[in-house]
Image (cartoon, rainbow, N blue to C red; front, side, top):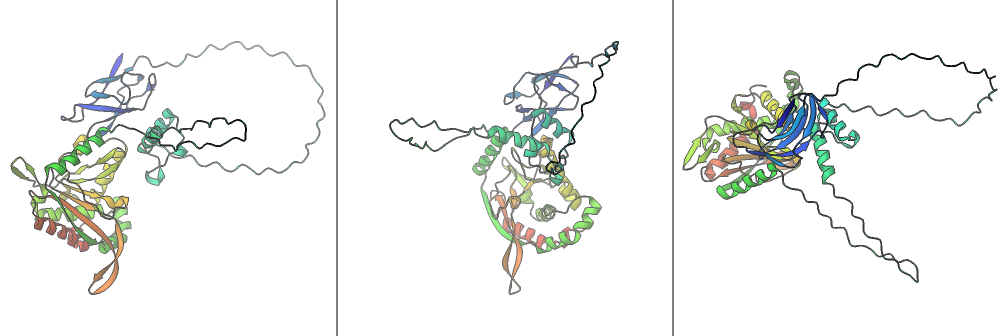
Length: 426
């Protein structure tokens, strides 16, 4: 019996996908629920698993664009090689007796140079079953892969990134040997400098990101206002409560949950920034679905934390970690990206000191966080060094006035610098 392997539906608006990579080769034996290939749409990257045990036949090669529901392979469930039957025991013939040979005297070994004992081998790296299968299928050396998981463990995203970098590495170009010169010593003729170019097609996600960013610049009256925040109180709270918080909730207390809480309180005061324009109408959202921008290997994605106003600090931090793990394991669903009313992005994790975030359409506001850096500031007439962060709010001026945007950012500054009203759970 042959079972078709089809491209699954990931949403009503998605009609086609790119078959990014096969984890298996044609003719390989696969097991039920084992990852077979990765598809990319303009919104998500998703792994597709086997529905049964059998032998895989690949019908569509990696890199092809296929419609949703199309068959890209087959699994022959009856072609699983059966274990060979046990052979009947054969009659053993006793060996002929060997002729007796008198022993030859052996000289005692001469003392030789002392050889130091071999060094202990480096302990094997711990790999998850999915990573172990992918490494074995590709014949990779795990020592050449950099792990980004907990305790520097290697995740499946690390292996895929290693494969992409290996494929994208330009082949070494060797200059032609210089022409031979007769009638004298050889002359070294330097070749032209190497000018290699690597061409790679844009992924579906990267193309979609480009379209949305250009659309946001062209279809909105986008403006950005800036401010700076003293992070002393938040850093002090995290230092004092980190251990009991982690013991109670089994997750670390980060900075993002403070900004989410402060943003929700500010959005309640300025509902226009939590609204969007639809035609000639303004849609005021009476709920708070906050998108958190996360950098992935194939592009920036913004999963949405739904009803963030009803979640505690621990639940917000856990939701962010769950989304990060989903992105690394290619399990992010289209429903995880839809319905956001406001977005927060943190360029500070990459070292950004100041930037202008672009609106995530059709939302009317996005908050940009940045690097925390000690700077001299004036406090009560004295110059003190404090951990400061620049923040930026980009907003759609068609619906949000400058006064509202500036005051909104000031409210966030006040909540972060004096966070007593937003941390009742601690």
